[in-house]
Image 1 (tube, rainbow, N blue to C red):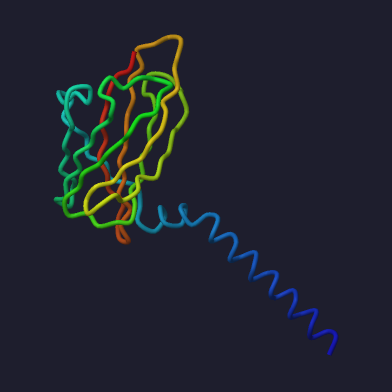
Image 2: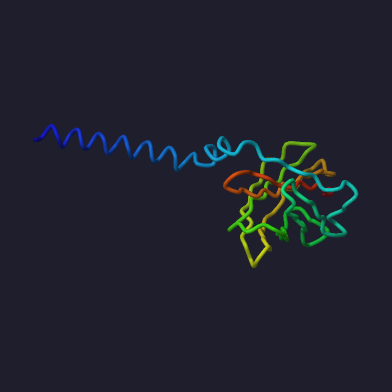
Length: 156
């Protein structure tokens, strides 16, 4: 009888370790299942300092992205907003990174504020070199695919 409990205990530990692995690496498993994120770029003429920029994704849905304040200051709180059509997810992912220098990857969860409207707040780091070109990837993770839009903008 004692041996039965030892084996049962070991089986429970193994099951807990396997479950932990899947919980911790669920994002990697999701990416493996649906493949790489298919990104569509905004028109390079669109300036986020002046206006919101809209992108039509591969599935026909649209993402209108904006940053406030429009001056996009560094080391100050920014609001990132995505207004979508034909998207009904609980949240979107926002990934920001500099394209001309490694300033790190800044990831945010854009929470749903109302139907089709998602927001996140964050701060971009400053750089002594200046003139950074940033890319913002707004990612929609659906059960069958991962799609998104990317937007480029400059900071001083």
